[in-house]
Length: 254
Image (cartoon, rainbow, N blue to C red; front, side, top):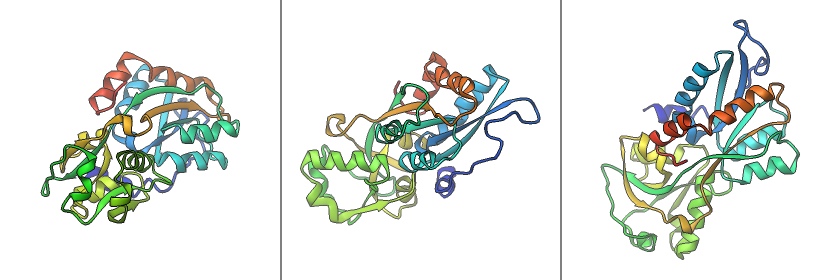
């Protein structure tokens, strides 16, 4: 499963020394750090962008948004940061590390999903404490945005205290999906885009968006970038009809 193999690569952001200079083919390299939940769609966005901008080569690296923001704040030479949620963007703004205004380019939904071999049926989160399962996977609310949204939804529904002892916190972007796909855990909270990419999970319940903060994807160029104009070109591309069509195909809204 390509997603299972990907998550073990997201714990370390690999930085190449020539990320903001001309390479041997005279293409300007633009290094993009992106939420791991964008990993599938970014491949097609990159290819389409590079066809339209043959003088630019995008280098993609993935991880949990909060962790990527910390790496940027420590000096990692990133040109473009694509974050899910506002928390990471706010942290960088407070450190004066944003060279552009924040551009929101997509939204997502949170769903409760199960392994196809162990289907469940719920009509609301209020029924979750009664579900016949011992463990529920959730991204760590302290470091994984999806986990933060899930905790908000559980608290808003009044079932946090009744379910928290069943929750298994995951600390790597995409690990929740991996646990459900493999059958290690029967059920958990993932993004709708994760569900769309997986053949091994079932949609149990779409979480009411009023129960948590909006799940938005934002793009910025960092102050440390040496190729700001090229980086801004990618931000502009994300606002085009072409990019929106690609994002929708992978389960995002624009």
